[in-house]
Length: 307
Image (cartoon, rainbow, N blue to C red; front, top):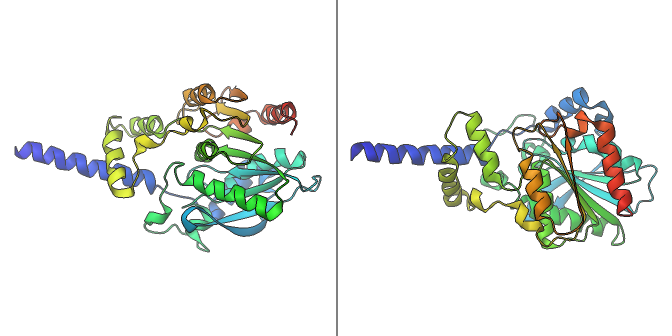
């Protein structure tokens, strides 16, 4: 009996720790991501500090920090909202900005809730503990924030603008999850997003040399403590009746969010869809692995749709 009690207590403790680790994981400051961009992507880094900063009222009143990067060759009527991945900041979306800027698209980049300026403020040091309002919900609240960014962009720059979406990793999952609510957008590009978060967390547990089944205990703990179960996070279900044209990009060598996620998203999409895998590209590295091909595919996709 004592052994059974000890095992139960250990499982509960591990479940709580894993849930907390997942939703409160380390985040980067704007300064850290700026340094990464300058090192890895000088072309994108050239836009650091070039945008006009402003704030947006997100879901449940959460304040989001954003920037508007204007295209000098555009007509002010074409916009794209770019959403970065987990632990990064709006600087993480800059690698994709040159593609759209050259096409005449103004770019809106912003920090996801619990990321960048939304979390750090003016500090460069991560808070000792991430509070409940800053936890990651793996697209559940993030997609609702994106809906607010979409609404704000149309109110701010005109109801008649052509507006598209681009997301990477968590940003990609948030992008396709937002399509469930039928936002007024013309297209969406999702890069290395997940079909459901459970399969990603199982990979993470394997990398930590822990049994994958623990994810289900962590899911229950998250439901009790944070108000949502990991098992309920399934972005692929958001696009079963979606008619917004969708371009799916994924690194063939991604061993974190494995390429099968891209195939599942492709199968789930109802409307126009195109999928492209990039040989040798790891997680969120397709743009770097084949920069010319990546840009060509985006341009082909937009040309095909008349955007």
